Amino acid sequence: MSWSSIKRLLKKPFVLFTIILLLKGYLAWAVTFGEVLPWKVLLTEIPFVWLLFSLVEWFASKRKLTWYMIINLLVTAIFFAVIMYYKYYGVIVTYHALEQVNQVTAVSNSVFSLLAPYYLFIFTDIILFFILSFRHTKFKQWKRHIAHKGSRRAVSVLFIFSLIVCLFNVLPNRASMNEITQAKEMGILSYEAYTIFSKDKTEQVPMADISQQSIDQLKGATVPVNPIHWQAADGKNVIIIQLESFQNFLINLKIDGQEITPNLNKLANSNFYFPNFYQQVGQGNTSDAEFMVNTSFYIPAVGAATQNYPDKQLPSLPKLLKEKGYQSATFHTNNVEFWNRRELYAALGFDKYYAQEFFEDEDVVFFGATDEVLYDKTAAKLQEMDQQPEPFYAQVISMTAHHPFTIPEDKYKMTLPERYEGTFVGDYIRAQNYADYALGLFIEDLKKNGVWDNSLIITYGDHMGLPMYSLERKDENLMQEIYGHEYSYKDMLNIPLVISGTGITSPRVLEQLGGQVDILPTIANLVGASLDSQIHFGQDLLNQSENILPERYYLPTGSFLSDKALFLPGNGYEDGTHYPLAGDEDSNATATEAEYEQAMKLLHLSDSYVNQLPDRIKK
Image (cartoon, rainbow, N blue to C red; front, top):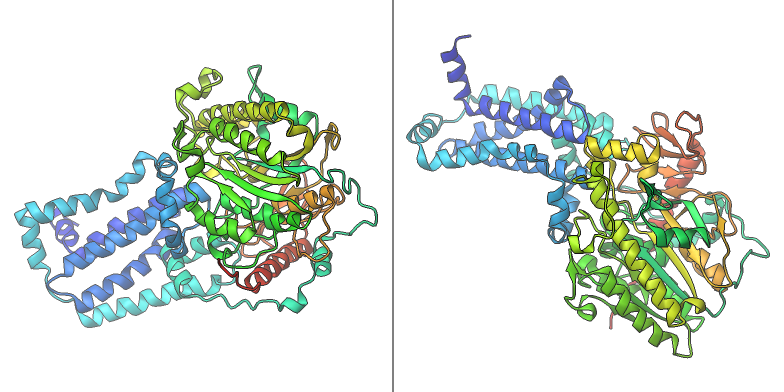
């Protein structure tokens, strides 16, 4: 074919934009699926594009090129959103994420930090077309030259062919549990369309059929006659410290002889430390952790718990402790409207909340005052609460060590080795070193003002800080150096839990599997609060040795942790992947199909129960 023939062919917008969107499809696949399968991309993405192009050829004439450019812009936006969302969450974005657009703009620094410069090439043609459409005479001539409808017969054949291929890609893969597998088999564009038109046909379990006994049976939990540590913290204050983006590998970590988190190390080594503890949050991240810890329910299948459940009469830890005479308050330096926290705190039954307005714009980093300000003002307020006749429950949410972890230099508390400088992992470690420093100041203040000795303190990470899908090669190498093996899903989800209390705990490492839903029943046991009339999906970690932890959002639907392995489904259980938890990467330890089914039933029961709770009467 001669060059002149190629030029004539490329002047046809159908051909030109097919090539452009095919190349963009390759980029989206390379980032999202970690591979480019040329024929697979061609057979999944292009038929959907041709469906849209066929409509243009059918109906457009004068504005044909404009419609091609609009389709190009929309498809490009979808591919770009898929790339960026995957880099942040590790899942395929859908239209549901539009509900969180205002949250994304609030964390724009985090989002832009994930933006590799070459991703922006996806917009190059759009910018070029825009400039040419106003400035170039030949572009206007080309626009007039193609202003006619295509052959109706040829377009009809192409439309039918493309529709058949799209249906062939979609229909056999509807039953897959794994959304990433679905998108890969259907094609990204077909998957996005499928999520819009598909309806959730899952029926809710009637409330009468949901009992604590049925939940415990699915989890294999047994209620002990004489529970260990029952009422060990009776009458004590309860303080929850939720550490932003804090992963378990930081505990007792030394880099070239430097302790990264000396204060939390001391806390973990002198109290109850749970190294096999895992996050269970979803799209709501920190706010999801707040929800789960205070309710012992799982997050919803779609969206954040704070946007799905705040209108419900939620059984909760503040309400449970209120029955024992506790006052309650939660402390967070961010705007209380972020992730709809004002409504969440009302639904959970907190007596008071202290947010950005209380902490003011003092020493701001990222979204609010620093951890030093948070802990300083919170310690003073807790001292006031401690002087009241009734005990208190306080939830304290740290925030300075937030993605992208680029804290100001005046907050540096350590010097990193040269190989860590300028890396994502290095920024993360330095931010967490500062967070630990601030936590140490808080502990000192609580000990000085007498609150520490009169309190049960629960400390844990809210969620991961280093997603596998966000790491560059140099960061992956640093994580392999730290772990001694390739950084994996089970490492990524692993967060610490430490339970402290003067006269309550002792130096002890507890190896049992646990997750964020387990915190409420564990606290209930320690303070002696009965859960007989309160449905909960967690279990008391001090009295149970086996566990099942369903996961959502950061992993595909159907993922869960058992005592032996982390499981990620393929189309179902049979083609899923098992990641042993014992530390032996070559281990044959697997999660069973029965556990897989139990995990799915637990999620379904939680969804059904919370969705059928009575609506909250707002004041």
